[in-house]
Image 1 (tube, one colour):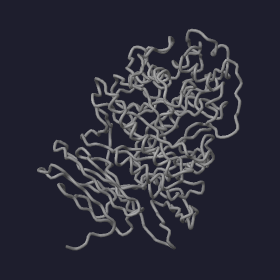
Image 2 (image 1 turned 30 degrees about the horizontal axis):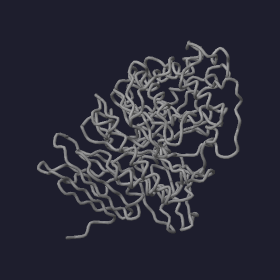
Image 3 (image 1 turned 135 degrees about the vertical axis):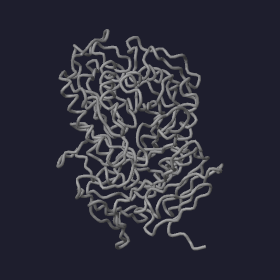
Length: 565
């Protein structure tokens, strides 16, 4: 029997839920009708014990696979769902790791709190600049001159190894709390000269055009001439510095370093791919370039939605970033993203790529948001747009079927939210449940993000949780011994429903995370049809075993004890 009760104590004090865990005291910020805080309690403290005291075996362990179809699987053949958060540090050293007293410190308190909320994955940011900072400046003629790609001589093995060793400390710390890591090569507007981050200075080639800082939100930098030129040189790989070749080379080193780590879920090759060639209704031309970047010229896929045949830029590498990753780590997953406009629901022309282990990796954001805080300016419009966006990406997924993933790749929402609005988050997570897809919320902490706001962070600067935590901390199935047909959770009432078709060849239990300290202070009642409960009463991990004769299994969780019959 799996157990994951961690000695948490619930107290209701002056209407505020206080959560104490392994020496950590956390408070949930409660808000009134106006959205203003009515009462909070401090704070996120360092754990008393240096090692986790979580007890029991993890509900999921080992490599996760994506053989074909919308779902992810564990080694027992169970279908796996991931809920989590993004952790991305966009200033030097461009990563988080345990380093007490530093702004990039990631502690056992962070990991413990994530596990307590039910998160089992972190999309963990890294940057090309952190991995290969080099020494050359932007627009160096030895790198940025147009011509056949050659070695730019910016790679430093010592620097790379130091960076990866720091990153590994975070991956391993999360693993101690049974949390997987999705490694994300993050970028926003390519480089710091455009008020973003990602690429090293030496890889920023603007053909001598100076960067101009337009007034307003940081994302307006995408439309500047200099940023457009820098992206163009990268996607076409048309300068002597071999920008794509070096990017792929570094990714190969990352994959080789982590190939044996059991807590790596997979790799996200490029955050929010963008080009100035994008137009508001999608752009076959850029998506063709993007697919060439992913596959390389020798593994070229096919377009979708009737787009023209793909023609790669002349200097693109023969082996793209995904084959390079897979050559160095053939077992972990690769979470490829469509173009950036896909997050708003516009068409994307990324088509089938005949490569294994792929996950269709999408972002969902609404346009009707404050340019300062990111919070919605029109909740109804945002809910409608995000619903349409998710449905459109769901329809795209089977169109990406290939010879190795005949039912299309699995899918995952690796970014959504960026908002402190519980109403918007409740609407989206309900839709994600309806589509049977996992997610990771943006973001865990603010970290002085140059391309974000404090309102996007789940954990505030004072260590307190926003009220959004009550929406994101959900009852959900981490592992299902069968195929899910429907699931839903209502944060206001704590009512959870799951229906699935059992797979009697799977010799493992269905495991459902139940956030007892957030939603069930008086315990919970579980009713199972077609299965029997084997976990202890009010366990955070609810386990059910399928009845051998069952054709369907239904599980319902409600707040409070079960009524006597």
